[in-house]
Image (cartoon, rainbow, N blue to C red):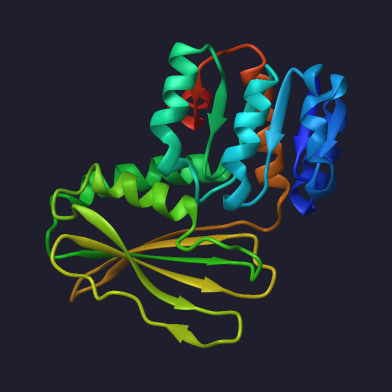
Length: 251
């Protein structure tokens, strides 16, 4: 399979290494200084483009790749929710293909399934309140993380006493805290921490006066995300439309 990379930071380089190890060819790499290459023959020859950039440019990157007739796998967060209706229309009415996920880690896919099932069980026990905390490296621009939002949506869909999530406290890289909203009835609070080079930690806690139940996913490095993105690209090469991790893993 021929792969184009959009974004060539630490994640892009890890994806490149894993893709080559799995027998794929990198035919184009687009970064900040060569965006004109979206129109190049090399980019158009790609079967799939894998996009990991920043929220401010991810939407334009996906549109550029689609315009070039290339299927897209995007792991950039902080942009998709706003543009989901447009992406859905492009895929359904114009035959474009986008596989978007807030997190491509295979472990997070399993963790998300456990999270949904646990919320369904805890729906029967109203004496437990639920909160979430996510920790990421100091370079991450969006808070809460896209993965935290996806996990929160899984809770909201299965826990009747929660109807929306809110941003809680943000612990900044210098240790200072930007206070968030206080959770009211029916609200799920997500606290965020920006620290060192942490790839990603997500913790969900159900707390009562008697005890606490906690589940955590702790990423050790970027390789799990990168492998998942390449596996998603392999899936996209054979499928069309608006896709996500629920298409890749049915559990």
